[in-house]
Image (tube, rainbow, N blue to C red; front, side, top):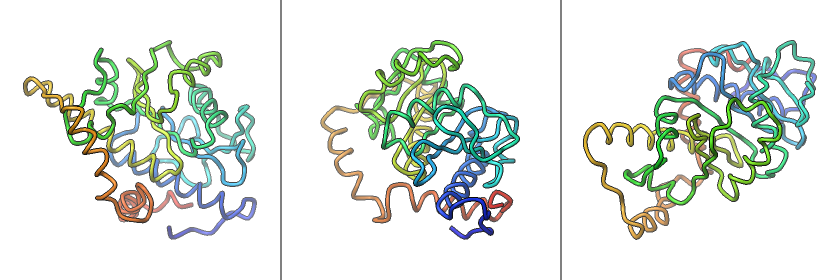
Length: 252
C-alpha cells in the first residue's frame, strides 16, 4: 500500500496498520456500511498484543485518517495522547475479543440494514444462497442484552462465540473477526451479501435451502477460486484503489 510519510512517534508497522484501518473505514463508508458516528472496526497494533486501534468517537467513517485513529490498550487506557474519546460500547465489545482470542487481529461490528434484519429473525442466516452456504455451521449467536457497555457481558460473548469467528448479535447486528484486516473485510462483504440476498429472497417468495451434502462440497471447493496472496488481500486492494480515486486524505 502506497504510504504518506510515517509519523516519527510510531513504528513503521503501526503506521502501516493505521493506514490499512483508515482505508477500511473509508471503504465501509463508500459501501454504505457506516452508521453515523457509531459501530467499530479495530485492529491490534503489530508487536503490541495488548494495544489496538479504534475509530475516534464523534467522527464519521468518512473523516477517519491514519493519524486520528485512537490507540488504546485492552483496559481502555489511551496510549497515543489522542484528544478524541472512544465509544464505550466499542471498547467493551472489542477489548474482550482482543484480550482472549490471539487470532482476532481484526474485528468488525456493523449495523447494516440487511445484517440487522437477519439478526432479528428466529432462523438467523439460512443456507439459501452461494454466499450463505459458505457460512453454514460457522456462525455463532448471542442474544441481545442491550447496549454493550457492561463488562460482565464479555464472558457470555466469549462463551457463545466458542470456536466460531462470525457472530450474529441477535436483534442487533453482525460481528466478524479474522487474523488479518483483509480477511475480516472479505468475511464481512460475504456475510453482508448473504444477508441482503436472504432479505430479498424472502420478499420474492419461499427460499429453498441447500442440502448439507451440497454445502459440504461448496465449502470444500471455495479455496479453489482464491488468488494465492492471502484471503481477502486482492479484494481489499481493489477497494483501496477505488477509494483512492475519490479521496486520499485517509492516508494522512
